[in-house]
Length: 149
Figure (cartoon, rainbow, N blue to C red):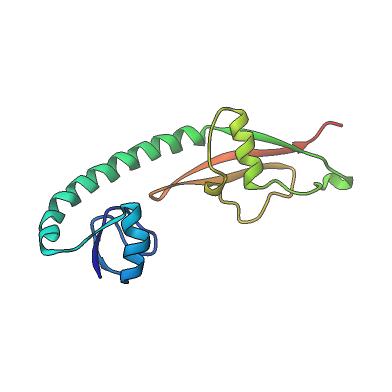
């Protein structure tokens, strides 16, 4: 089935593109979420207008995300952990721990947007990327420090 995407879909295409998908995927996933419309001749004629509206919406969103990224890039959080001999951490610092530390500062960030290749296991400072969407990435400084006993 040929459809017109109303939103960017990572593995399918950009908003405003005409793509082909299976009927079940369209009927059970895309249609109920309002992510696409059928690509009839009438809709394809309307596509040019929608593409301008989509482009304006995407540009506005990208601008908002960039300002959010600039604001987040100024942020630094500290996470304290218990350490053993040789300053080895007991456990590690995960994206959820970083999200909680940000929440304590009044900044809400979904832990799924915080991308760690692997959890932090060393004391010191690390730059951690937060993927906000639309190719916008903010890097925050995360300090892992000794927990005072």
